[in-house]
Length: 214
Image 1 (cartoon, rainbow, N blue to C red):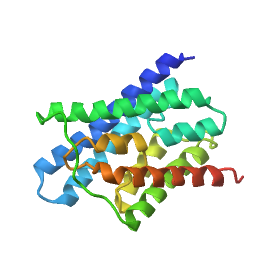
Image 2: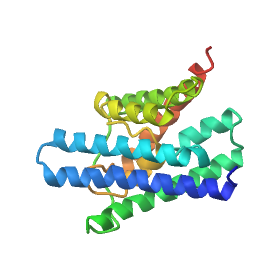
Image 3: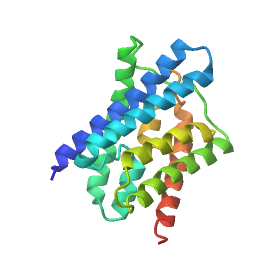
Image 4: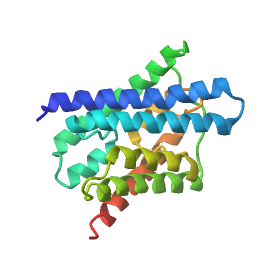
């Protein structure tokens, strides 16, 4: 069994690489196409593929949360202690921010950036609530099904939610915070972050409640 330190390294590295994939693919898609839809399609595919790989290889180490809402729900359900969940969250946020810097470095952009992309309105709030609800519901319900592929379930959920939600499914406070540190295609203005995080927490809580239904 992995030690807490090993689990934290897995959460840090996994979130770092996930954010690097999200932001990096957004930059690449935006550079290669003037069509926003094509850029978003590239962003979707790269993110889903990265999620599948990262969950597959790091799941056995830490559970591959890469998401403070997932860690908080697991703590509420007794799978993590509150202290472990807090440590996971710090590792995820730190990894996410460094993932943004890594993406900028790979594309020779200024490392330190702040997004100006305002994402506001009731539609965005509802979308993030729904996206996070779907993600957590899939994780919690899917874990009960013997032989099912959790990497595939999570990846497909995020890929579909990129397109059926108005917010393009951030569904993750650590990723949301990290994306405030990029002025590229995938960015979100810092002023929009608190509302997104609130919606994500509400969506996660709702999923946890419904998952108790047998």
